[in-house]
Length: 173
Picture 1 (spheres, rainbow, N blue to C red):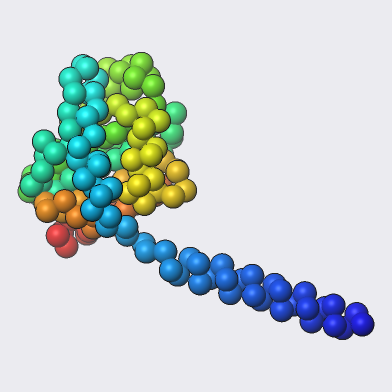
Picture 2: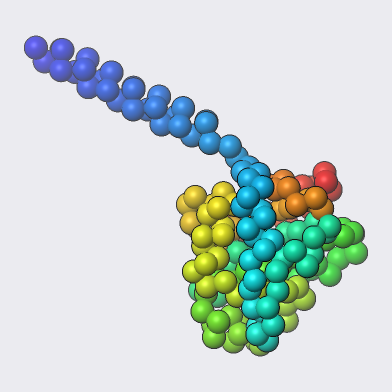
């Protein structure tokens, strides 16, 4: 009778592992949901001076949208590289936009302290929902979305950016 129980447990474990594997494989690595992108483009978010912007202002450009927070060490660590990328002349038609998932006061204090050469918009917790719709099911930060000039999601990145990978992805557009 012990052998039957062990066989049953082994089959149950294998079934669970197989089910998890199939579930992961069915999820697309890049979610190019046009409704999520359209929602992102229409979102009216204030910048650090209180002026409201919609990402549709940059329609027709390659967009690298970076969701971040001041309390997130990898977010802060990658910002100088994003500034360098925005200031670089090697990638034409690129616009980086930071979307802060943090309190307006924290974002304003942060941007006063650091020189950031790309627009920083403040979304608060709404930013988490926007990022989730774009494929960030884990809800982690930083989360970055690469949109081509036609507004299609070409790549998403969860965690600190590997700039060599980002530059390679940009070069492939």
